[in-house]
Image (cartoon, rainbow, N blue to C red; front, side, top):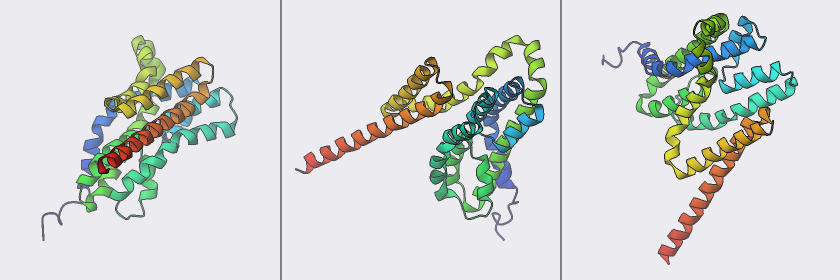
Length: 248
């Protein structure tokens, strides 16, 4: 019997967890911030934890809490939350070629976040097919539990932590923007991404200044995506013309 055949079935789980540990540096502060904001908005500790357990959608949770606290209609809250999470329509097809057949994948997709996608997209192709399910399960489970734990900590002790360390109250609101900035910063090396991200940021700021706070995120994202596709289309057209000129 080969060594690979005798490898414990839990080894890929442990590998996935260990490789997801660096993500906790971003997950836990943002989760603490969410737990604190949720309780300040009138949600109970258990409600905040339940939101992080079931919705588990980062920015969408902050939007959800803010809109509910502001008295927005339920249909609008649900629609906006789903709109922000449309990015998962792009995530899943990019991971699909590396997902081995398993009845557990529909359940595990609950753990597909921006950060897990980024790590999985780079890591899954490097793993043997037999280890991909376990690796993803371990990584996603650790991230999910850290998010829930951070939310509980923020909801229970967030106020006390801020009262003891006032600087923390100034830092926590920037935890989520900082986390996303780390994800998008490397993209500014590309002209196409720089234009799309720059337009997204400017659109969000302008819409916020105009008072369209709830619509700022989805509309700015739509502007950035449209800009990216227009630049991409223009680049492909120029490439086709250049190839045609060379053939002539």
